[in-house]
Length: 621
Image (tube, rainbow, N blue to C red):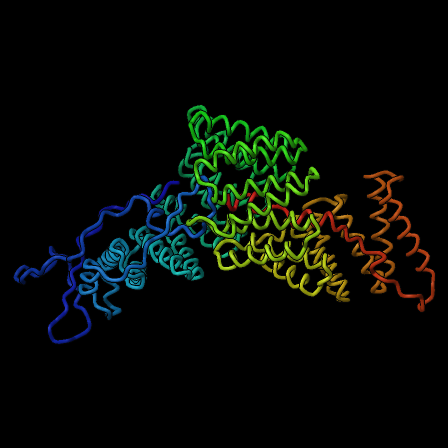
């Protein structure tokens, strides 16, 4: 991914003289050529001069860790306090500086150099941050238009330090100032500076769980990059894949597919045949196709990716693709082929990573799921226990995301085995692993949603509602309130409220779920029809009988068009509607009706939605 082109050479370092009289203020001296020739020259700055980095992205902290194939993420090392170079810079620049000195046009570049030196030497972040912020203030006051690029660079440095300290809101503010200081129309340097700023801003929003804002920033960065480099540049392909991965994380699969196809086209044109870039593109495309339910297309992309990786002798990556192929075969009901793919991957992972690596446990969990679906419950339970032994004592370096994802998969199997208490224990462990991890809000929301289903199944409706509410709030904050999963989650939270007799709250949730699912899934989708029925039942309980009748008439019409008049679901809707129509002619003292007789819980459908493997959708691979 292209970064910022180095600006013209900065002037000689500014020299600072601290008088002997104890005055804390510094006397800022002009560069040597402007000084009084009769004055004795002073020693040059002890801070070694460092050539400006050609890519500020290499000097900034990537704020989000997604395991992306296209991401070259790094973090600044800002932890080791004290060093000779840092001490020299500290002695050279006093703690207190006259505000009027900020008007000196040479001060900003000098402070920016000190900030870079403090970072490179491993000095603590506070001093580097102080230098970077003072540099930005000086450049804003005295730099003029010709120093706008250096102003952006100083703000990039400050934002990277803020991100490393976990102060993401301040990092966002600094980056917004940085992109505002650039003007892509002024040339490639400014364009690439703006691109770098928007991509870093997108990363910072992502780590704070704001995927919607993150995607907006990535999109703006891509537009600037395409304007500067052209539509077919290979660096544009890399950014397209990066943005596609963000869309996958936000469950926006149509947009992700368009970007991934563009990436494939660029790489086919500019990369050699059977390139690793093509393999990465096809793995992402397979993930998108699987999420959309197009398993045949997903399998095709995975097989092509596997062939490319075999040609490049990437054995471990081939094994990872074999796991994906096994998942696709399992979804297609081709169980023998799925077992073969899983066993191939298991053999490679054991030989390359050891018997106790989380990758081995992940394959064992998939085999457990396969054997459960084929009715071999004893083998399934055995594979679950073997995987859990690995997760209980993982090898050093195992990521919390991998461990939590594996526990979620096994919890889903225990749930299907009617062992909700064991499933809840695993989900609670997974939640504890991820609750403090940055950029994992979507995964945490998935765990909480799955826990809500477990609580609902065992009749703990208050805890179910609390889990659903927490998951909903996280998805709202992260900008994922436009997905079908969000609509299903609202529906299930509404059912929990019904069980707690919070009828008004349930109605509001069903109404919002209806709006989301109509947009994302369509009016005739089974999930949408289930919400219609739930909303009609709630309206009936609230005395809004005419609205309930209107909804049920619409549901009946849609079900007849989709399923035919002889379908059992159609008969059920007819009976509900007939009952409501009969009651509509009664007086006010009609007998109250229990909501349980009308509510369509469709627990199997909801359970299938919320127990979907979130890591398998690109967050963590």
